[in-house]
Length: 140
Image 1 (tube, rainbow, N blue to C red):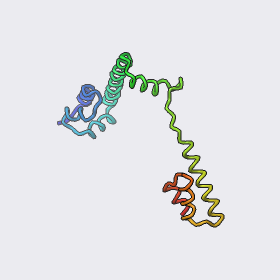
Image 2: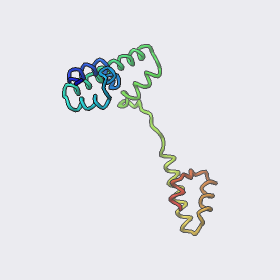
Image 3: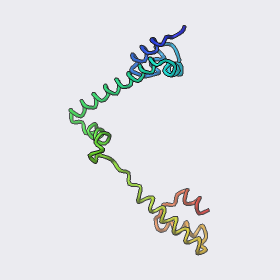
Image 4: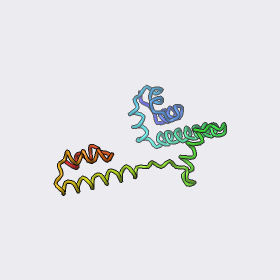
């Protein structure tokens, strides 16, 4: 049985862009769907349209939750759409990196002064510096 471009496109639309569902409906494999998407412009367009429609549908659900004053939905929206207004989560890794760099510089200084590898690691551990596998490899 040969599947036409129209059948592929219709199945993708009906499945809302979910490839495994479209493949099951057509009795073909997921790779066959992707091959048709790449081969036929109309199938690629149907795929894009179905994904956009699903995104619109999902956004509508999010807006409903926001209107219902769901805190998690409000936070999610602000973190993803309110970045220009400062609603972002910043991961503070600078301090950890600075500690690691400081520990490496101290270790290098100790090596120059003739300390042993074990003495350096002990000194790093005593001062609470993070001794990672990268630090250990760098000192070895």
